[in-house]
Amino acid sequence: MKKFEEKTLNSEMIYQGKIIDLQVDEVELPNGKTSKRELIKHPGAVAVIALTPEGKIVMVEQYRKALEKSIIEIPAGKLEPGEEPIITAARELEEETGYGCEELEHLISFYTSPGFADELVHLYIAKNITRIEEARELDEDEFVDLLEVTVEEALGLLKEKKIYDAKTAYAVQYLQLQQFNR
Image (cartoon, rainbow, N blue to C red):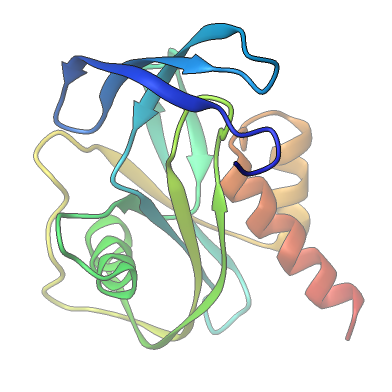
């Protein structure tokens, strides 16, 4: 057994949705006792740091029902079945912003909430972005405003809690460190 491993004794699928599934597992703890774990199963997602030729970060503002408010984020979206993350990243960048790029470089992948979810976000940086004349359209249930902000402006949006999600906060701090290390 791996250190601290929890052996699954029973697993029950509670809900299967369009984006997530919810299951409840009964587990045996390392000390031999049992417990329940409520788990979110997610196909994974991508997020894209895109910089204009002027060095501004391309972001979108959209309403997030779970938060009951709009927040500002970097472009992102979930993986489709069998889709490679880099393909998803290019698609989401185009759909949400109308930009394409010459190259996508994978920076890092991270779990968003490992205490209860298996969502893995793959973060890319888009290189040499350009506007696409006939870009893909947003999904029919997506409504976004496009913003282009400097790193300094993004730091201000973080302080104002207009940027309020981990992937975007990570992206802004990554870009801040890049400036600092020049």
